[in-house]
Amino acid sequence: MKYMLIMRATDETFQAFQDVDFNEVMAAMGRFNDELIRAGVLVAAEGLEDAAEGVVVDYSSEPPVATDGPYGETKELFGGFWILNVASKEEAVEWAKRAPLAGPGSKCEIRRVPSIDEFPQDNEWIQKEKAWREATGQL
Image (cartoon, rainbow, N blue to C red; front, side, top):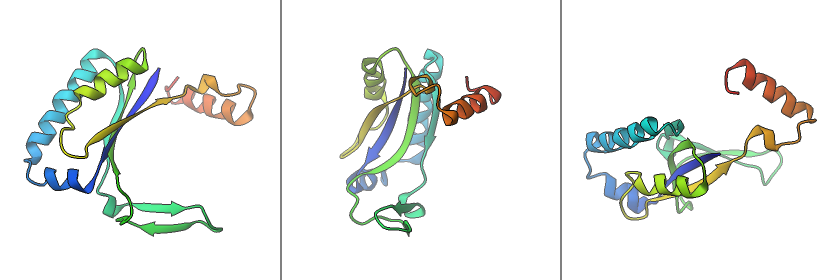
């Protein structure tokens, strides 16, 4: 089963990290990623750029409205993610507890990523996606 571990942080978290050496952060993340690789559970991992460089598309009106970051009313921001292929939610939680995300307001949200096999197999769009995944070596 695949699970996404989503790094979440607050302004307080980002403030606390301003005093931490970036090389130390990279080394801690590198060691954690290396553990995931050696355990054979890492599928993907990426960090995200500063929210000030991002855009939010709001679908509450027609047409949708795109707004540049930063987002003043947002209490938590996503900082990056890992996708793990593990046996259970409990194993995903155990890996998340080992992630180097210490600090005030720092959290990790864990969400299961459904397999394409869990969607209706007679749906033409699922069939097209499945063919694309097979052609690109993802299945």
